[in-house]
Image (cartoon, rainbow, N blue to C red; front, side, top):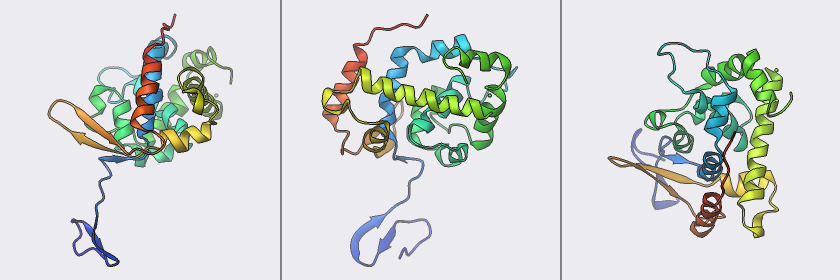
Length: 221
């Protein structure tokens, strides 16, 4: 049992072990850094600017549109199908690092904001038409479309940059073996360090995939 409410928890069976809870610095989705790097090279920011319009005016833009869109896509890519998971993922270090610079110090969107984005912003006619240019499918259709786009991003990662030995992995295998990688976020004065646990995703494999992403030459039109 723990002998304090705020300190490490001690266990009777192993007196040498201390258990600490660091929700804002520990993640189980560090592998999402790889598809995020891929979408950067594929020009997703440009596609968002071209096909989606932000209905907000003035300074009411705490969460940039591109961050909300990525949060919707990457939560599904990691297997979080319900926007209710946003409450738990808001301060997750992996999801914060996937976002814009201004969100990395605080949090990504909570459930209410993400629900508003998916059921109101993306269902507006101009945005729905923008999404339809990429696929054809409105609130339920939009959510289905987001799931399809998450699948396609995973498929592109597998097809374009995964080494041959693991290229046959299914999306479920990618989620469980690659994206579900533990990590701990450390904040320095001018930068962040995300320490990854080596399991399926080793340092060698991580570097190999990054090198393949960097060799891609594609620009959205």
